[in-house]
Length: 417
Image 1 (cartoon, one colour):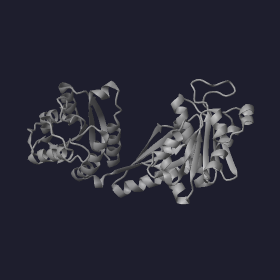
Image 2 (image 1 turned 30 degrees about the horizontal axis):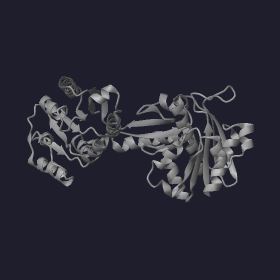
Image 3 (image 1 turned 90 degrees about the vertical axis):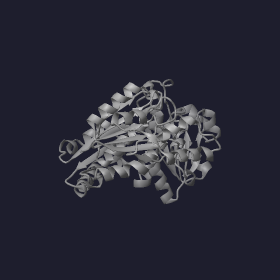
Image 4 (image 1 turned 180 degrees about the horizontal axis):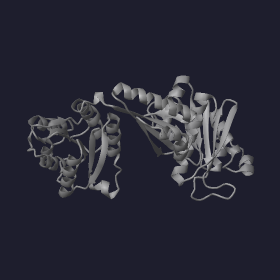
């Protein structure tokens, strides 16, 4: 199996002020290609540290991919140091100079002289186009190794990798005939340890496949990798194991690979021609944000009311004052009236309502932090779930919103919650 090292450059990564999403993206994509990431190096904008990282990575792996440090400033050292370690001389590429000049000209700006360093490349390197910015990347085959340099901004890096690098890697390493293939099965409901217990027989009896569980924001992602004699054999193994996992997990499975829970809801609502409205209290609009993060959500999403106060619940959603007095804002009864109220005022087919105690304050012995009521209303019917979530304020809000979405998913797919 091919090995890869990923180098992330930038002092901001070491300070913790920036999340290294590039490394996660590349690890996932390389793994899907059948390339094993054996090491990751994160280094600051320091010449000696970067040199050591490149030297070690090239000793360890067949493929080295580095992100960041391709800009025009003095601390953008990546290409210069990578070429030094690889034993390559750089020269000015006139075509790249013209591309940079055109980039600035279209924006009615004068190109700084410092940007010329972005047009310096070894003659044997392939220059990778950057359609999202000024910094081109580099693909270099040298001494039986492949060295790839990509820009740091995630939107630039991802576009360049997908458009330029992945196809070249498949060609150079003959990855279309790879012996491994993988997929991710996404479930919601049980925790990671529960999923592990439910799949114990499949995990323990693995022969030509492997399973890895990852808990992410209230979901558990089951990464399945199959290793066969050839591509078709690997796909056959993957299909068989995936089917066994889905049969075991049942209705907890909501999607695969890049699919999201909100995306599945969108497909189901569009397919059935139904519309949704939501009313939120403790989740503070997070449910609506998850829905509207998707482009085109206005086709099926009416809107939301964040009724944080009791006054808002009464005046906007029509919750009865006696309900609040007798049962409180965090109650099964209030959740139901919130859902029915927004359903009536919106005229939608479905509504979701959330009310609870996200903490860290506000809990009592009878109603502790983490107690949440989630209601799903449809026409004359209304179902309410009582949930007890653990974690900090953000975790409880997130779990509340995702559980609400899952209630609707189950209703749309199976007719129950």
